[in-house]
Length: 451
Image (spheres, rainbow, N blue to C red):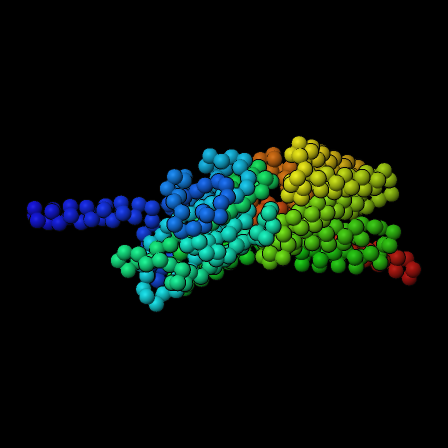
């Protein structure tokens, strides 16, 4: 018994000695496996090219643990393993460069090809180095201010030539991420740096994780690119009713509104799937131009439906609000104008908020007058009005505390996506009611002519 106890104590001593010798290394033994690089990361704000070097001494840096709580996921599409960024770790409102470094010691079968996944969620862009060699990036670092694109799942190969020989047949290396975040993103409470830890493993396991992350990303935006197809079908149905009443501009405006709304939703998938559009382009094209025109087009459609031949001042008001929305949105985004004083950007953002409130009030006036003047006919359109308003004024509902997203089966589906799915059905019923009305009137005229 004493002999076994001595052997046990000797084994514990040897393990502690080995851990002390590699105090700054994360020991990893690989078979057909993938290991999440949750900790220990060394972290430092600022930027210095020497920090990519594997020999750099980062012992005085902060230590960061990216281990997520059970079941954690991002608040958008449901990517698993989400943790808050550096804003929640003592660097609130910090924007700019920061570095993450981790020393790893790997033991793997001789024939294995090793690889690394990039972090699937980062604010906002990153470069990754291994033992000082640049492996790749997500984002464009060719300019002093990096160009932001959507973060996508990525794989980086780690050939044995990049590793250094370690004790006991292990291979050692330093993984370093150079991250940059914009001032606009820094305003988000939990923003900053890596939110989902990268993973290290053999190429087969890493490829499987990469495909899973892409599947989650694809599923998260599939509704956004499916609904525009339905919008187009409803728009075609609306325009096909135009010949029955050429004086009614509702069908044309409804077609325009649905086309613009479809473009806005489809742009969501285009931005996050393809990386053909930078965040700056997304902000100008989608957030400033298309979203403002969508508001104006829908109010014109409902004006044509509820009060077609009265309150002509409403048309001028819609045009003025749409123009004011474009201008205030254009100068209210620091993503578009990073050099503008923050006070000026905040002022335009406030103006944009009040312009949207005026849109809400004008829509309420249009619908209210329509119900008073047209009675039962106006009530039929009310479900469509409510459903489209839930999507158009999503940020106002969120400010009121209405939940914005749910995760059925682990996939993020937003309140807006649910509302627009219901809108397709409600508009179909509305247009079908109109079509049946035309049929009844046509039949009545035929009977009168026959008599």
